[in-house]
Length: 483
Image (cartoon, rainbow, N blue to C red; front, side, top):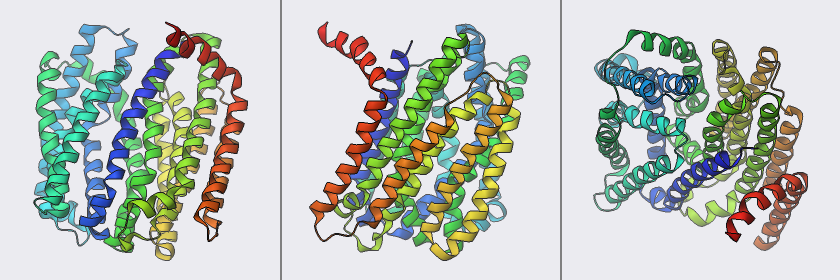
């Protein structure tokens, strides 16, 4: 079982990403002091617009480059040519779409953002997304090579620079939400220059029609899927802002900032899993068996983390946020956290389709978009930002189920233990939601009950995977400590 690489990379991705989110969360008292819920609403809407624009800039070409890197047996020269071609297209698209969105903002952007001013807020967000994709391409390249160490160092340095500038602009220069956006833009320019020096100049910067044809053939069928996938992750912010207010959108954004730690874990595992999956899929029955084992164990892990994040959300928010304007935001945490648990389940199912059935992925995401829009339009008017969180949870669950059905039909070889995966997630979700009903005067009684709930679930998982955990300990941990 060639598991050390995926364990090592998953650990690096998770530690770096959780460290980022952890630092950002511990700065939340500072942010909520200098930023109102309406300011957080502006940040959420601007990030949604920026992420939408980035879809048209990258066109999913980074995924195509990663796939052909492995398809051509990690050929170094071919990789330089592929990434060089992809980089040139992304650079051209950055200038093209950035100019379109800025020049035509009155017709394209302004109707979407409502009463949020285009200048300076959305304008800075668009400038940011023009220079960011090259850095993201480089990070994708490092993931493809399974170079998690360099990926983690880059991520951490980028994050620390942005946080430093944000704190400076908020506390010293009192720039408010403008300062947060400006810090993002300045960081993007610094790392754009870094990528040009360490990565771009080493690639073969010459357009080659056969390579581009193959890349676009792979990536363009995924474009509708990517757009639809964007809507599932960010459309809710725009709808909360449009249907209710910037303040409601800000409350949702704060709750999502905490709950998205689960997104970090899910994506970290997936980032390590995908290249490992491409290798294992070619190893026959033994490889398929390992894939299923890893998927099953991963859902137990993310469910355990999700319970911990959900159970103690109220206590953490009480400690970290003193601004009464944010009272009650912790209640949406279980919905957001477990939305990302179902996203993790979805990743395992949909990765099967990335092998040769990319054209059907759009069907899955299109259905999820329809569910997402319908639920948001129905729930937000009555429940506000809470309705957006419930819609998010139900959307990701639906999306995972559809992905399961389609992948089962399209691929007869990979058969996950999907029933156990869903049972694990729903048991964990039930435990998390039940904590909302706890009403005791004693803080310690409530914490004791929550610790007991978390402990019981942890013991169940440990018993279930006793053999696997023992094997990992004896083969890797014990061997390392005795050396």
